[in-house]
Length: 218
Image (cartoon, rainbow, N blue to C red; front, side):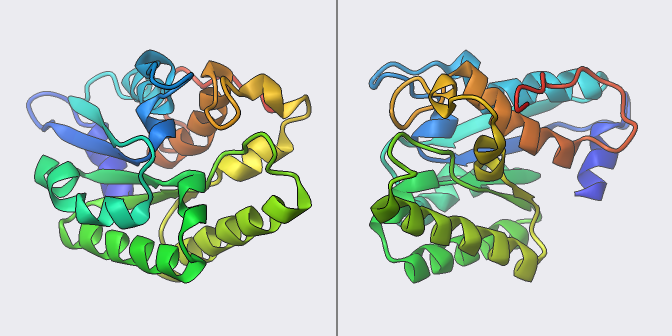
């Protein structure tokens, strides 16, 4: 990630095109009230705007490669054409609560394989923990979600992969978490800003000037 931050800071004639891919499910795709997609309010676009402010001499693209309803099993099958063929320098991996429909060990294996292939292609993987959804605090649902979040955090630690902890940020929100939601399982603009607030610091070097994402977690 340090090399990527250095390259984002380069200016003409030393700068090169940098592709950053947001890979995953309906949340990075920007789905609101399905089938409506609010791309300009989704966190990949917010991240793109934040990076443009922080790195005004960079030539880069934040590319959304996300399919609504998909989990990491489906993602692994389309990793080559949907991600690696785009020659990314970084890949944000976010399959969120969709991975709750597959066994935890399967999700872990899928994410491990995705990380390995992304790294083999010379890119930096970034894991994103799931966002909250309405009903997630119910006892019969909260354990499965907590187990998934813990697995992603451990995987990041074990494999030395940066983790953007969206779940932690949503959990820390002091108000009604429904204020962050467009629908029961899709964040609104405010919710996407919370996610972006976890991701952007991974790409922006300490002390790097630029517009900060509005902190709405307090």
